[in-house]
Length: 334
Image (cartoon, rainbow, N blue to C red):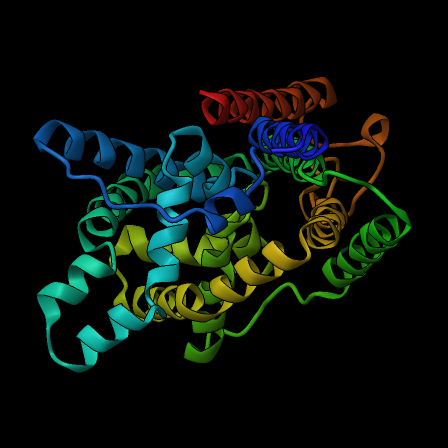
């Protein structure tokens, strides 16, 4: 091979390796979308470990501000989760399903993986929902302060996934922030309890699984359905649970794939818009209020709990998310 071509090939290979390393270091979400991930065989111990990872993802989805996608990165299952979601529209899976070869469809659709992971997530939600309901009922402002820290740090994490900030990214960041701020302010205190709205809420919330930095339970907070969902899980109210689960399935099969496609094709603009949305949504969880416990005010004018105590809870929320994000980046580099 001529020396010039050899040097050019080596330079291109070096640049490609460098780019791959930087993407891994940032924990870029599209890495899991582009790679073909085989389903590894799992023994009993590995199955138990996957179930435990499902518990961790379930806990993160239960708490507004914690992203299920971020937790999936932390525990090392994000790429396989994305492959499992994508497999539902693959030709081999659809052919097997149409032909009635259910066992083959189960395997092609990553059934063992999703069943074990889902069992862990459901267990976490069922066990911790009563505790979350109790805290929201008795310590609303303290919970809001912790959530504020979680969401603020999640915005930092999401913004960190933008690899190159340009004018279009800054514009989309501002559009998302202003739009969400106004939307939260105009949103009614009560949203419909109709079945169609519960299905919609479930579909929107589950999409956060594919977006590290965005919390599904936080989306339920914005839709005023978080406390409703927790109460339904605690009481076993299937009239609420079934529509939410149905919406989640619809979200995984439609919205989640659309978001995955948009992130793959327009990663930086999409992440900038989502970051702005999270920033603007902080209005929903501002913990400092006047004596009525509702009207927002400055921290030094708050008439509720000790402002310093609320500030410490905000710091605790920020620290929790940043530690998770740091662990996720280390896991991506491993």
